[in-house]
Image (tube, rainbow, N blue to C red):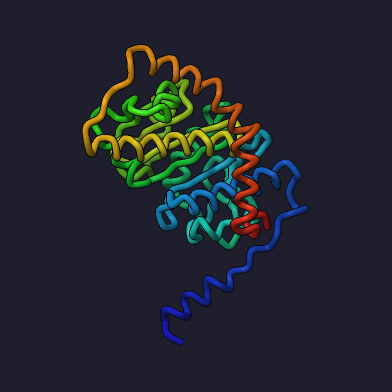
Length: 263
């Protein structure tokens, strides 16, 4: 066997013991939802090899949250493979996996300091990065953009996020918003649960994609006042649509694509 094939075999031999029945029912549901979100990100082509992160807070006073294993592709993530880490980024319990310190810096900043940030999702898509590098950021060119524009914060690039001191600045820049564009870096969304967070991220990413396409030719701005009205509609409507309609449908889609995420 060649060296490369030996490495592949070693990865295949990593056993992921099931945690179903070994964690609370509430934590297991969050694990299943988060694993589904990873699979859906891969399905929509938003993943960046093994990089970027989706995380979720585990109920309880310990400030624990779930993060993806650093050496799995998003289409490989399962509910049991998600790593529970503490506020210092250290695994809680035994795990064969490691996590990304940059993921811990960004996600822990929001989980530990913003009450409603139960889920946090961060991407490096080409469209998201393109808009993050645009001087004016996200523009009100489409209904999709206008639905999220009123809830977006910005954070200036400081290098790869491994400096824990950056957490304070991320939280300060986030303020009362639930989405963020990291300048020259990518996009981020938070939510009261995994489904709400995913839908916000979906709208943000679609808005970025549409902007890149629109700016390739002539485009027009909406009438005065329309962006503000649409932004208010988005703040009220997106969480309701996410929880009652869109996320249940997406969860069914994830099961149709590959139900192994829920193991």
